[in-house]
Image 1 (tube, rainbow, N blue to C red):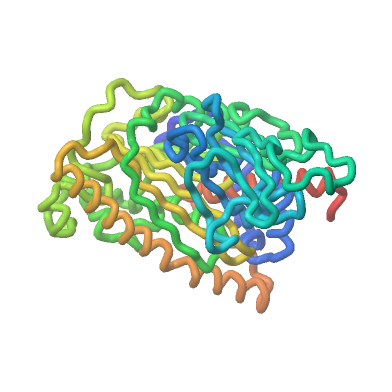
Image 2: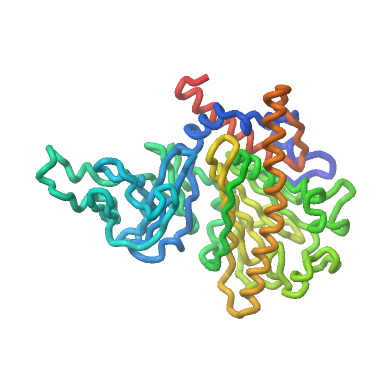
Amino acid sequence: MRQWPKPAEGSWTEHYPDLGTGAISFEDSVSPEFFELEREAIFKRAWLNVGRVEQLRRTGSYFTKEIDAARTSIIVVRDRDGGVNAFHNVCRHRGNKLVWTDDPRAESAGVCRQFTCKYHGWRYGLDGELEFVQQPGEFFDLDAKDSGLVRVHCGVWNGFIFVNLAEEPPQTLREFLGPMVTALDDYPFDRMTEWYEFTADNRSNWKLFADAFQEYYHVPGLHPQQIPNAVRTGKGFECAHFQLDGPHRMVSTGGARRWTLPPEFMYPIERITRSGLVGPWESPELGDMPTGLNPGRVEPWGIDNFQIFPNIEILVYRGWYLLYRYWPTSYNTHRFEGMLCYQPARTVRERVEHEVSSVVFKEFALQDAGMLTGTQTALEQAYRSAGITRFPVNDQEILVRHFHHAVADWVDRYRTEVGVR
């Protein structure tokens, strides 16, 4: 991990010469062939966050996750010893999807003692072992010990549940996350259990929405009410700190607190409830924070946005956090998941503050999402009609540059390994 203060004259990008400063290619966002490589090189090999331990509060609690990019479905369950297991969601008898309700393509959750296939009644324990077969004498040399659910590598960091679909991951979860992310080890994510969740099917490549949230160069143009002149420099709005570590990235913002701005730069509901885009104006104290938070020691500090490769972002505010996930469904579509996580409200007023904050967040997220179909459409047209793939990226967009560079690195390594051109 390298950490650099930005010099008075110079740039963030110059500290990472491997990234270069030229235009970058967005062919990775418009090519169906490249997306097929991403499936194999990234989504079947990287550690993927699929949930939180709070979703598995008791023995037998489970949820399923559809990972279209890897063409698979998994079950995540808490076993009788308190551990968290993950399995491919398929019965070992005739391949029926094991856990589903009305629609086998929809995700589900619940509590059970066993998993029972609704087709022929085979049953599996919470540890994945095959426990019951209808009429076992009708089978030829059936080995029950070798017929349990197929296990998926599973790990937990700070309450975040990750899975890895590789036969043998080259790194442990902690090694994969690296020192920049694991420096958040002591952050009290487990205290923020009041959740507001959003999902949206977006008509753009998964990387384009991630790009929208890892640069703030767009803020004055797309969200002018968020960044008034009072907090702009002569060059516009600039972030206070950038940092790279392996395939992961982070950015810190600073500037005036939202509630110190003139009333005309706030929605009326924000002034009334004293809550908005940056959350409640007054949040319960969290105590000492880990050294990994605000690593640039920005003052006044606003937000830390940690982008964990490939498709999760954790945005830490004062007293609460946001979680984003981007799940590809094709080369030019993806499902976006957003989750706002607060400490449980102690009063009606605090509950209203949380709900107002989540609604204001959705408004700004829709502004970002509203650009993406236009971006995707134009990139595809430029690529197919004029062969244009490369576009300039500025210093405030260093994380965009790094992200596409990391994706290319993973795909290139895969190509070399399997001999694909």
